[in-house]
Length: 120
Image (cartoon, rainbow, N blue to C red; front, side, top):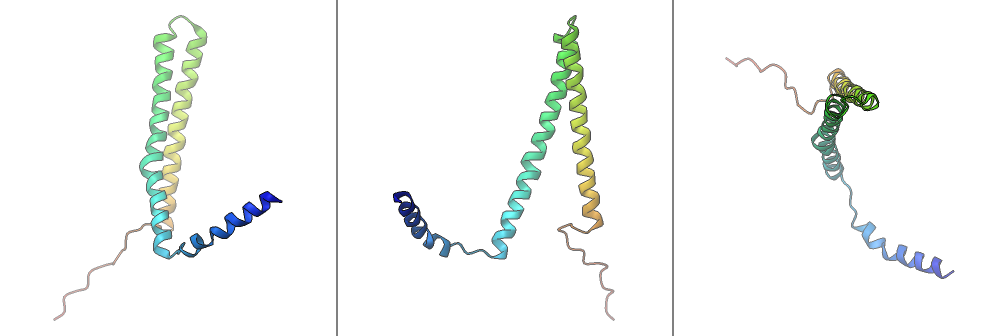
């Protein structure tokens, strides 16, 4: 019962926070743009870097540390294959997203059309 009292008191004390939580379209739009910017500028290059590192590590394992050990060569071969598959999937999804953006006009740019002819 004591826990319920603490919980209700904490909830009642948080009501002023809800009153100050004004949400308008610009805040939501800024949040969305921030999340999309984070994905485009941080997550995607990080995933490409990880796929590249996996591919390079596979090359290192296959050619250098694998030398005469067949098990290490197989591990290196599979790492190179997974790195290439990762690149292929990421580039394919990137292309598909760009095709969908172009098809459904999801570009943020405004097309004003042809300029007006000069008036006489």
